[in-house]
Length: 358
Image 1 (cartoon, rainbow, N blue to C red):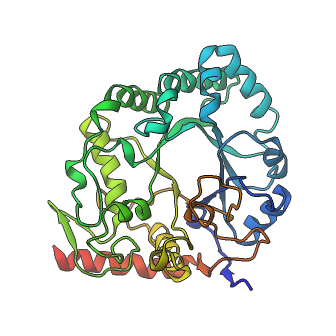
Image 2: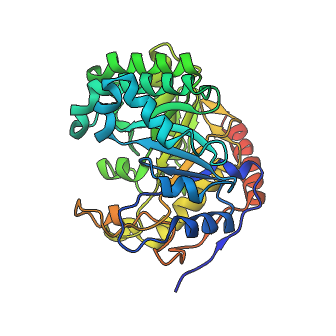
């Protein structure tokens, strides 16, 4: 039996979005997904590849769409400008603006992830070709092109007992490509999309305890120079900011394009209670406008992974099938409070505590 998710009265709460994979044999239709997101006032929706059924269902819904170009399509997108133009002509132009497409994410976790090495040479050419296709369609100022990257591109590990975002650099293996990607983003006014999973960083090094990863610790307060960190998420996001600053790109905004905590598969770490605490604390933190220690007072656009548990994932890990906010029958897996009123209290407490430690 499901538990309740409190409905949102969104103003700035629309910064909370959700990811949705389609690797399930019992998932609801996209029309049902639209109704579900509207019921809970979730304002943004990321899919990992073009899907006309999504574009049609979300027409005039008011929900922003983030659409991916799959890694397997990068070679084709990079091979010729005409391939990218055909993709935009088929999947973007017929639906926009009735379907509110916000970003096109060209490739997912291509740089730094060994399993995606074969796609690296195609990434930037594909991004450029998609950008040119949007320009030809007069959409370059309305839909932004980016790519999503994981913590694998970061040279200095960020984990619960190693919190030094200021010392982070991108790994040497990706620096040349990263420079080109960051220049592309700056030239086109696009954000840097980061997939940030404290759960995975916690597994890499759990000696500092679970609370820091779950936003649940009041102490210790971790200092990195003049900056204070009370949770692993902030440290991971600021690590990306530091990496970009070190390469001469301090002004590119970050969008957290995927983050979550599984509710099953790893004993006491992945209990429903832990996942509920993590997601609720994340939402409160994002909606509070507290921002990151490096960017205080500036909220960060965030997409939760994911809408549904996906039973058809084939990598064998139970956790990967249990990141959902909802079961496929649309019942909530756990209770989530999107209420912005609580977030205002969090903001006040945040600034009071910062004053106390300064």
